[in-house]
Amino acid sequence: MQSLIGLKDRFDIAFACDPDHDRHGIVTRNAGLLPPNHYLAVAIDYLFQHRPKWRKDAAVGKTVVSSQMIDRVAARLGRTLYEVPVGFKWFVDGLHDGSLGFGGEESAGASFSRMDGSVWTTDKDGIVPSLLSAEITARMGRDPGECYQALAREFGEPVYDRIEAPATPEQKRKLAQLSPQQVLSAELAGEKIQAILTQAPGNGAAIGGLKVVTESGWFAARPSGTEDIYKIYAESFRGADHLRRIQEEAQTIVSAALAAPTQAA
Image 1 (cartoon, one colour):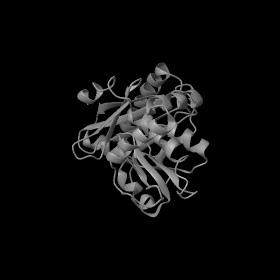
Image 2 (image 1 turned 30 degrees about the vertical axis):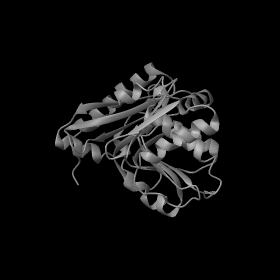
Image 3 (image 1 turned 90 degrees about the horizontal axis):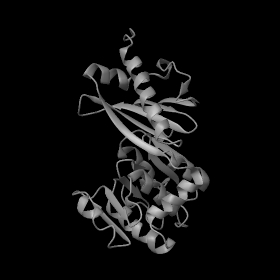
């Protein structure tokens, strides 16, 4: 991405894809390389206001580890939020039949319907989100980075991060099978816990880990499928210090759950 970022001051908008063209990178003059979560929120906000032929009930698809900014944008748009486990496969049916207008994940994967609401592809595609950034810039008279700044003024500016911690295969198995009852805390970083999820709200599928949600923050912990680690995704709408508290308490919650003896069947 370094060569792409180097184009920041030469063009109004610049974009590129990874070698197999299923992920996008968007660079703007003011914001530089946009974090994927930022661009997903901007794309959703724009598409659902500029695609009049899409179904009126077409939902917004996101994974459980994508930004809560998307939730707030979807609510303002009056669109159903379809929140699923990590993995683009969960968007396939909705993208195919048009019940989803958009599906996106925090790792810069996204796809959305054609102009007429019919299916374009049921897999993530880096090309169309990249081209969309040019459409947004031309039609709105401001680039996606500026559009995100407007969303942050409207909804608050979240801080997002992902950290990793070592885990044995047995601990990874336990993490994937956690139940909400194993979280004994009533608060997270000074806020009342609103939801403890081990199944995705959109389709009820197991998320392979745990997500804890408060009014202005959340974390999700899930084991890696390829390494002896687990990952904690976290976000706060109250700044970096609050995010660090969420991360610290998340690790405490997960460590306590992993240390608990396995219950007999």
